[in-house]
Amino acid sequence: MSLPLQSLAWGFRPVPFLLRAQQQYGDVFTIRIAAEPPWVMLGHPDAVKEVFTGPPDKLLAGEANQVLRPILGDHSVLLLDGREHLRERRLLLPSFHGERMQRYGELMREIAEDELATWPTGTELALAPRMQAVTMEIILRAVFGVRDAARLDALRRALGELLRFVTDPRTVAVVATLGLDRATRFKAFRSALGPVDRLLYEEIAAHRAAGDLREREDILSLLLQATHEDGAPMTDLELRDELLTLLVAGHETTATALSWAFERLLRTPGAYARLRDEAAGGDGTAYAEAVAHETLRLRPVLPVVLRKLTEDMTIAGHDLPAGTTVAPSIVLVHRRAAVYPDPHAFRPERFLGVKPGTYTWIPFGGGVRRCLGAAFALYELQVVLHAVARHTSLRAAGAANEGVKRRAITLAPGRGAAVVVRDRQPHRPVVAAPVPAVA
Ligand code: HEM
View (tube, rainbow, N blue to C red):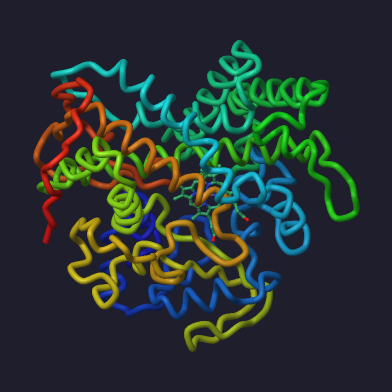
């Protein structure tokens, strides 16, 4: 396939493009997209393992994400490599430890319930923007706390504006043509980024001036108390870059996963009813967890992760020269029939009581670059799934499956996960009815 055709296929129909190429060429093949150097696609879990357990100084992820530098800044953990990357990651990790997630749970539930109380009934509603409002609020409040409602409100609007600008197809087209570095010299770009920067620095200054950081639970307060191994605290510039990284990385991704979860649940007989029963019964979260795992398997938010080789390496038996970009393919690994029988079907049951495999379930990437917010996101998915299921009866607005539409780099439901809210009454607990096993 020619370069323009490959670029179009990657841009508009990435999933069928990858699956077809794998059928034709096997588990290792090269694709060429626009101005990017060729990517070597890896579709086998063993090859993925080689990359995720390989030496991080020879498999650079930050280098492969450079396109985000003008927005996220030089210190962003997403863009650094080697020792500098680990230095930043070490400071961010404690904010995302498993036991901290419970503390965010109540906040997540309240935000979701406030949002869904505003949903109209009996008319079509696109869930994707609603889920974005929920995840934006959750990440903002987790990162900053709720000390100053007016500043949070200003930040919410400025950030929304920036993300709308960045994901606008016209911006994506300009960036694809000029490269992000040159594109950022445009006034429109600076006007979108300027207010976010100003508000972030104001928020950092206000937190620094606060005398009660130790009592606070928000991530910025934790980061202000953290120090590098040499005892140095984080600078304002470093904080700005990491905060924006968390806000950007943690918002659209989770909203997209939630939208897909409802898109799939409502087209799978019995699935939403089963989630509602679990949510109403107060009897654990096993099914919601399985729904989150299966959604991220079948509809991963990102199709690939990227690593750039600094030295010649042999991967999956292929000798690859320095400079090659390898792309462990989330889409391809997740559709392997040998691992997931009937791989194109949405079946949350396959994950009930089953821990997803480290190299066969990779929606959050892996190795030293594995998504820092994975536990946070999975917890958020469960809490929001339960909150919506507890309070709403939904149906899909249309029987046809929604196609995959690219939004900048994420793969989102084509019609924004369109639903109709039938009823918004509190769901009565199901006491005696046993939950049927779904085949
Ligand atoms: C369903 C939601 C999410 C998905 C699918 C997702 C996916 C990913 C992926 C694929 C990577 C790259 C991993 C690699 O290269 O191996 C990543 C990195 C990252 N994610 Fe997420 N993410 C999600 C939610 C979040 C949230 C909620 C946060 C923060 C609150 C977050 C923060 C980050 C950060 C900081 C990195 C960079 C890690 C590093 O380079 O060391 N993500 N994410």
